[in-house]
Image 1 (cartoon, rainbow, N blue to C red):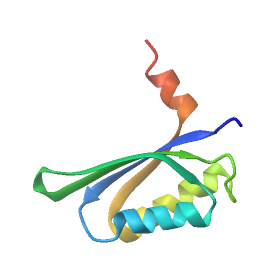
Image 2 (image 1 turned 60 degrees about the vertical axis):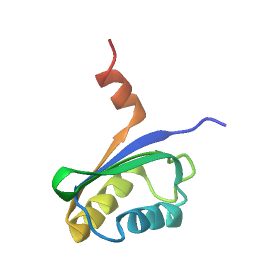
Image 3 (image 1 turned 120 degrees about the horizontal axis):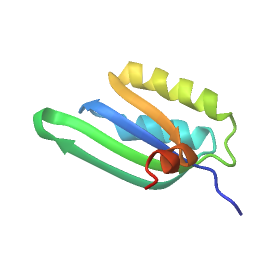
Image 4 (image 1 turned 135 degrees about the vertical axis):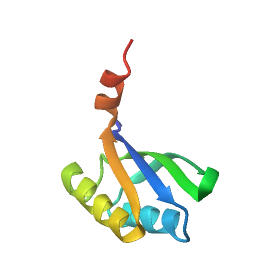
Length: 93
């Protein structure tokens, strides 16, 4: 089965519930988390990257992006979505 991979980047001041809120949304929309990396950087900044498979998602990519932006606003974070193909083209040598 072919996957449709998308990168999610989350940046902002650390607070409780970030991972739970985002992963709960992804679960509800049938989006599988393939990889996740998070850390707290200096001055309490939270940085998370996720690689997710949206092949079986209940909603289209544009809607996923809009919903994640709304979640980011409620959390006081910046959440961005980028398709793997765009990422590969940008970082090609």
